[in-house]
Length: 416
Image 1 (cartoon, one colour):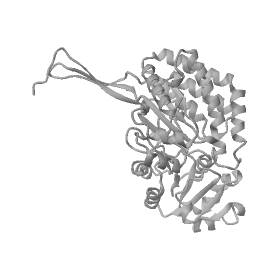
Image 2 (tube, rainbow, N blue to C red):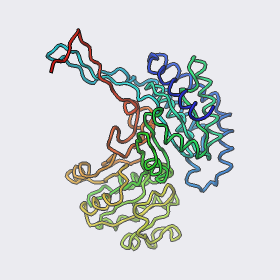
Image 3 (cartoon, helix red, strand yellow):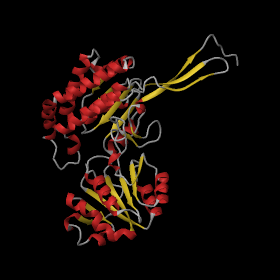
Image 4 (cartoon, rainbow, N blue to C red):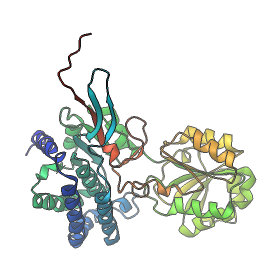
């Protein structure tokens, strides 16, 4: 089937999904969760074929890799999505006009959701689960790095869809080539919204070249400001977790902003980072504070390009600041508006930081590792939007819906 035919088939399939009862959708999702566990050996063997073509030190290797534990987590997310109430049909507004018209505003599916993503096979499962729950069909355009994994995943999904008498085109996997990318970007009339997930380069390319509506899920250039009043034990744990829990994800810490009065505490703050093998690019005051107290092979002088970099690896920058104003100015200059945090015991500083920082998720005394649909109680996420129109932050079920106005009358006509 050519690409245009595939687009048409997915559009037709989308018209049936919104009519499914919530109970049927939930049964399907639970069946799919069971299928993931049953097919774990097959999924891992196909994923291994992709991993064999990527160097383990590539930042995308961790994102590409599936494990038994990760597949179990994906299945649990699928079950969590099934347990959530469906947003479809929710009445957002209802009123009667003076002329007797009954007007209501009701949540409905977007229709066809296109996803362009790179070496992240878990996205295939997440997207399908969320789209099915919200009555959307999806067009999946994965990268060549994950082609074996995605083909295996879609085969499992299609088997479950067929078992429930649904068309496989409810979730269509496009070829992993550039031609499919270009066709999807131009799929006016077939795709209702396009969501890119991946590198900043991919996101910018989609934004500049797409003729269909795009929701950006931007890169995560993440900062944590350690304030003059910050608690050392809290900060040590938060910074280590934000940086080292999983370095390849977009909510991992890239730059610590340190109040100059706390330079004396920097070796203690950085000790867990040294144990994890984190390379630090430190500005002059931070470098001086760490010299001789941090492994020399892991300590480098910071260059201008290290600030505003998404490392996606065991690397981070440290910038010394004179106070909250300077920290806020640095974040404003370098943030990708994903996740930002303050560690402080000053209530006024915390409130000013929370209210001033322009980002999808802003934290006080907690790790940015929590920027995740599952952690926010959304079950899973289709991406983390860094823009402000339609959706912002982790995108769950509600963010995959639109609304329409239902108007009920009894013969009314407009005379003016």
